Length: 101
Ligand SMILES: [Zn+2]
Ligand SMILES: [Zn+2]
Image 1: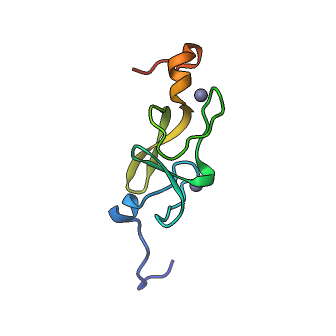
Image 2: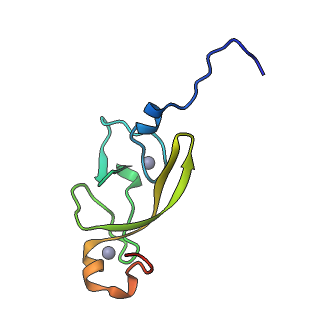
Image 3: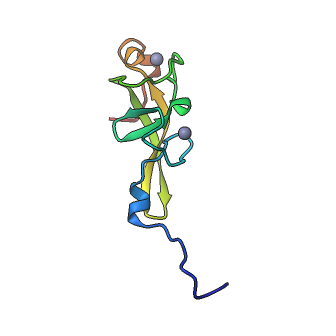
């Protein structure tokens, strides 16, 4: 272990960097992005509907997800794991997330 060097430690600002919710890499706003609430995805990382497979696109509304809480150097964040599109939420109750609100 070497002393005397400035280590790059995670800071709160790092934690606030936008990150792709699928691959967890930082995203650049110059890239094509799909945003979903507070979540951002690379264009190629956009999640698909758990039920019908339709891929979340820019501006899609009404999608719902469930996620798991993961710990991060700066605290914790919610990492989505399953998505459902609006159509399936409205039309296919068998695939609704269970145990949610
Ligand atoms: Zn990504
Ligand atoms: Zn669907």
